[in-house]
Length: 101
Image 1 (cartoon, one colour):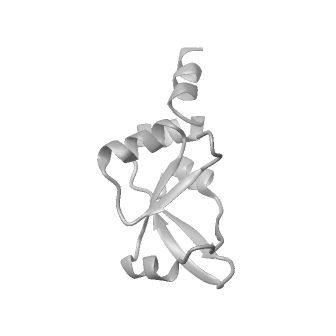
Image 2 (image 1 turned 45 degrees about the vertical axis):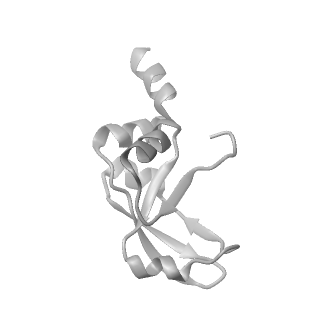
Image 3 (image 1 turned 60 degrees about the vertical axis):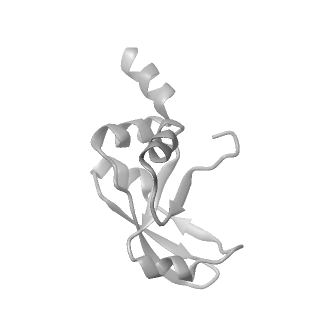
């Protein structure tokens, strides 16, 4: 949150880690195709667009491009509706602030 991290891509997440990311407003994403993990290397630039739209529409997948390689991959967002609302609000504190006002 304080390092300006907006999303984390991993092979999988432990439940508590995923919940903590959501509460801080960080989008947890997983590789839809396990072999895509091997395509990403240190110092690669990954561009992900339309995350907010995907969250709002309830989509489970978002497209990402490894820019320096020109490779497109799919990332999954396995989230329930409340987690989506928290992320769209910018984190749990903002979500609570918005729901009480």
